[in-house]
Amino acid sequence: MQRRKILTFIFSLMSLLILTSCNSNKETADWKVFRIDQEPALNIEFRLPPGWLVDYAPNRDKPGQWEVTLVPPKCTPTQEVEFQNNCITLVAHIKEKSTFSKEAFVELTGSDIPLSIDGSRSALFLGLESFRVNRIKVERYNHLIKSVNGNVHMSTYFFETDSAYFIFITNFPYEQAENETLDNFGLLLESLKTTR
Image 1: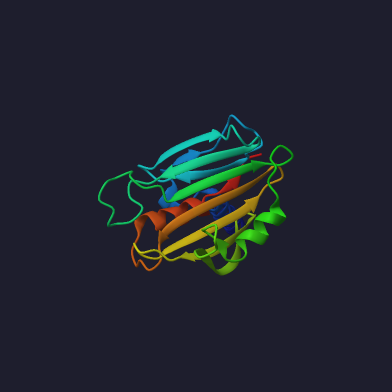
Image 2 (image 1 turned 135 degrees about the vertical axis):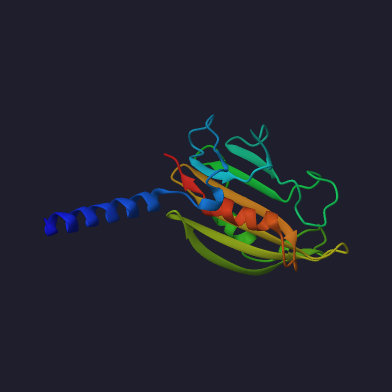
């Protein structure tokens, strides 16, 4: 009888651990799942924060490229008009259909990026960091863009699956202590996973 209780306890504990590990982040559990079902090669999904608008379409001029615009109600707490600014974009390139070059992208993004033809303005390269999200290796390239309206922190998140390259680009004020949109983007990124 004692052995049976111990086995039941162990089995219950293992079941609980398995169920908890399969459960998504509690903060994003009620967020809608976003994925592009029309194109099987774009085999990722992520959770979209409540109230965010999303628009996506293939680029007519660039075969194999899709653009996804994510528009939160406010990019910064000081933004007066909701949905006026776009601070998050996702660009996807289908392998073997797109002319995207990973090597050229890494070379350009891994250094200062010219913003003007004469080279007088550029996004200053701050560094690169790599991390994993649900077995997907993500490389984050950080840049500083100086502006008369305030400095902007541009982050470019690059990752790939078997069938496509993906690039998130975010633009937020450089020195901002509290930003719900930036926090929500972090949770969105944590929910990223492959679908096929």
